[in-house]
Image (cartoon, rainbow, N blue to C red; front, top):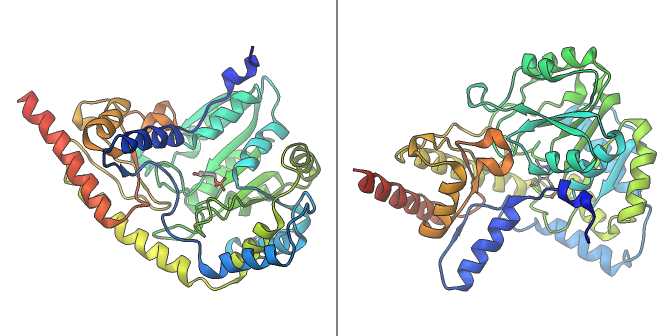
Length: 391
Ligand SMILES: Cc1ncc(COP(=O)(O)O)c(C=O)c1O
C-alpha cells in the first residue's frame, strides 16, 4: 500500500513526453525535441573549470547546509547589482536547483485549509506542491490579451482571508510573458493590505528580449515577505549541475534550512564554487547564448504564425513559444499527441501547465535552427493533411 498523500502529488509532463519521445527513437523514429526546458548549450568553460578545480582541491565532502559563505555572498551581491536589492547574505540559502525552494517555500508556510494563488498556465510544480501541502490552489489565469500576464484586479478578486501565499513567475514558463514594473507596483498596492507571503520565481530573470527585469521584492516593503527564487540552470546552461538559491524573509531562514537538513543535507560544494565562477566571471558565452535564442525566437514565432490555424504572440522572456492553436479545431493534448506520433515533433500541451492552458501548445526553442525548421515543416504537413481530409 502506498501513502494516500501521493495522490495529491503531481508531476512535470515534460519528463513524461521526453520518455515517450525516447521510446519512439528507440524504435528508429526521428523525433525533434521541443519539449524539454533546458538550454542546448554547453555550460561556459570557466564555470566547468571552476567546478573541476574544486573537486581536485578536495571539495568532495559535506559542507554547511545553508550553503558556502562565498556563494551566499556572491548571490546577495548579484541581487544587489541586478535587482537593486540590499540583501544580507545570511538570508540567502543554496539548494540543488531552484525547485527545492518551490517545494520548501510552500511547505514552510502552508497548512491544510490555506489558499495559495498561483499562475495558470504555469510551472506544474506549483499546483503539485500546493496540493501536497494540503492547501487549496487558487489559479490566477494568465491571458493572451494581457501578454500572458494578469491584472491587479484579477489578483485582488482572488485574495481572501485564507490566502497564505501568492506565487508569481516572471519571465514565465510556459508563456514567455513578463510582469512589468507598473503591474508589480499595482500588485504591491493590492498586497499591502493583505498579510500573505509571496514566492517570486525568477529563474528566467536574465533571459529577457526587451526591457529590464523587475522583481516584486523591490516594491513597497515586500522584500520582507518575499521568497525570491533564482538559479543557475537556465542563465548559465547548468541544468544538470543542480544549483539554485533563494533570498528569504528572515523568519523563514531557519525553518527552510531545517527542511534542507532533513532532505538533502547540503548542496555539493564543488558545484557551489562553479556557481561563484558563474556569477563573478566573464559573461561572453551567456550573452552569445541569448543572442542565439533571440534569432531562434524570431524564426520560430514567424514560422508558427504562417501555419494554418495557429497564431503566436512574441515571448518576452525565457525560451518558449506558446502558440494559440484553437484555429486547428483540435484540443491541446490531442494535437500534442498527434504531433509526436504522426509528425515526430515532441511538444507539450498547454494543459500540461494547468486548465487555462487549453488552446495552446508549448514549444521550447532550445534546439538548433535546422531542427526548428524541420519541426515547423512537419507540423505544417500534419495540419495541411487535416485540412485536406476535412475538405
Ligand atoms: C518556472 C521554473 N521554475 C523553476 C524551475 C526549476 O529550475 P531548477 O533547474 O533550478 O530546479 C524551472 C525549470 O524548468 C522553471 O521553468
